[in-house]
Image (cartoon, rainbow, N blue to C red; front, top):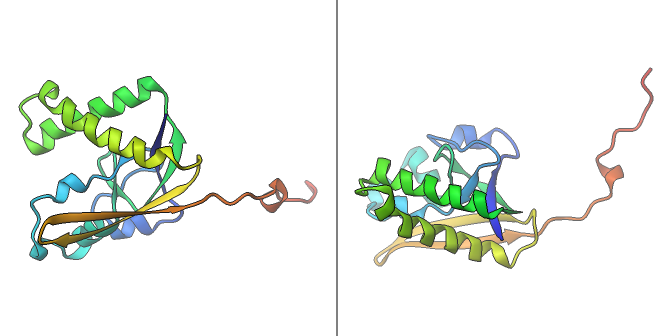
Length: 158
């Protein structure tokens, strides 16, 4: 099974998000966080989280990019429970058992989004607020094959 992990190419996420995700967290779209937002709420750093932020499942911070990766069943179940706990803590779900079906739905959606992509494919999200609610679009950036020499440093120890 595949899911996505947050990735940080540079320090820009630290500057554009109020609460940036740490690198290498399992992630979901996280668009549910904006379901009751109005246009007036989409300003400043909140605008960046709304427009382009994936939700990391450890810190519950945002990341501009995620990369498709293999996930083990036990990790998937733990990520589902983490998101269910977040629904209790941040959104007032009555308990984890009540939140688990919604968390499973979010993780299933993310796994389906990742399923057709090779590992290391980058994903970006774009959101807009419409009269019908939050509209999400996704873009995939295929991994580029490169020879090891492109990254190796050659020279001697002297």
